[in-house]
Amino acid sequence: MTSAVSLRGVRKSFGALETISGIDLEVESGSFVSVIGPSGCGKSTLLRVVAGLEPATSGDVLVYGEPAVEARRHKQVAIVPQHPGLLPWRTVRANARLLLDVNRTANGSTTSDPLALLERVGLGSFLDARPHQLSGGMQQRVALVRALALGAPLLAMDEPLAALDEITRSEMRGLLNQLVEGRGVTTIFITHSISEAVALSDRVLVSSPRPARIVADIDIDLPRPRSDDVDDTPRFFELCTQVRHALLHGAQA
Amino acid sequence: MNRTRYLAPVVGLIVFFSAWEALVQIFGIRPFVLARPSRILRYMGRFPDDYFRASLLTMRHAALGFAIAVLVALVIGAAMAASSFVDYATQPVLTLIAVTPFAAYIASVKIGLGLFSDRPVIFIVALVSLPAFAFAAADGMRGADPSSRELLASVDASRWEVLWHLRLPSAMPSLFTAAKYNTGLALVVAYLAEGGAGGLGQIGARAVAGNQGDRLWAAILSMAILGTVSLVLLNVLQRAVMGWHVSQRTQRT
Image (cartoon, rainbow over all chains, first blue to last red; front, side, top):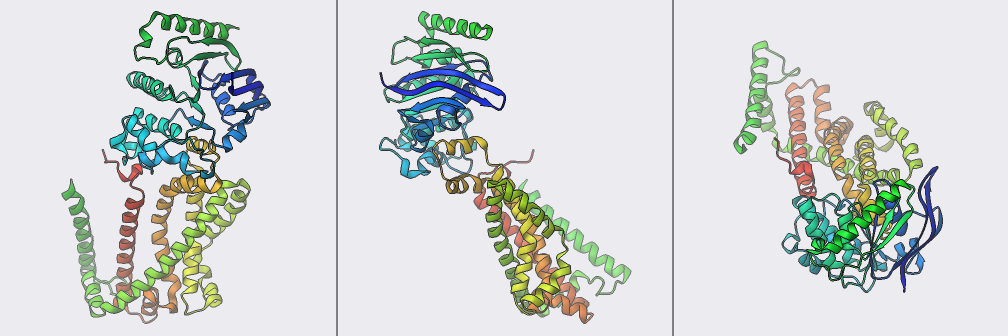
């Protein structure tokens, strides 16, 4: 097994406040791993540490064998933030290119054409629109394309669907499965939705309340490719129950 | 809606000028104190070339000083946004420039840079316009959306790239607000600083010295027209470069 992400004894404190308390983790290359935990548990901080945006207070963070900060310099991590963060003065087309337009020398050979991706997520007729002309779901699709276009081997998503309505969320869930499956990228997905975590992931990590520790590591053995009605299967319910119990247990521990 | 929009300002101006005309006649006010609009127009009509050329020169003085102030303010603002040391070191200097009455040092600057030259006029306009632009640039750049900043950091964008792609466009709204404030100021400063350097300021100063009411009021009216034209141009420019901004598209409710 090759590790896309490997954390050893990672701790993170902001002054006296400990947000991550000793995490050891190996994420297999090409897998989709969700981290679920109560609000404010430090899971977003964990993502920022993995993305090389925040140094760990102690411990090692390796992304494809190199320290997270180096991986960031080499554009190995594509992030999808909770809020799409589109630049209002750029058109959809230009927003989708943003990550390719900066630090160009680090662009890899695996970049994708943002226009083709925009077509694929159904935004082909909105290329010259500005973000304010799009719905929340459409904006988040642009943010997704912006990350995928980079062609980075690691996708780091911080509750990207949290701000969306229920209907849009389930659409986006299906879209995310289609886009990520078979692309060979590794995904770390932060969420506080149990069904979202189960529907999307190969593996769900359950975090304790702050400081974050991993209290359960649950394999999601639902078949791939995942269809849109995966959440109607009995196995889906069993897995959701398992995750929910782990969350309750983690909160009490 | 559109008819109101174009008709209302015209009605407002007609009422204003009619009241002015009537008051001067009713109270028999001397032309030097307040000339009638019809009389000012008739006087201007006798020397249209003189007033047109003087207006262009004053516009040139104000516009050049204004442009220099914007460029310097962008450099200072970017440095202030990037370094809190520069920020704290620069703030008192800018405040000092803003609160010192420029009318008091006009004579000294003119003697230093040439009594009949354009240089002191442009210099003083630039100096007086600088604080508002620098504060606006610094505030706007500092206020750039944190999640967009993090997004650019996640691919290790350089300082220049962050400045160009994010901070500069983020500063546009506050820069335009400062520009509207500074437009009137720059024209006033140019007028007062011109003296022997030509322009409407020279006509005005000579009219005062020679007790020529018609000549003085023709210069005043020219300044008012110049200010209006400048603000219209600024609004057109703002619409062109800031069409993406909410201020340029919200309908009043």
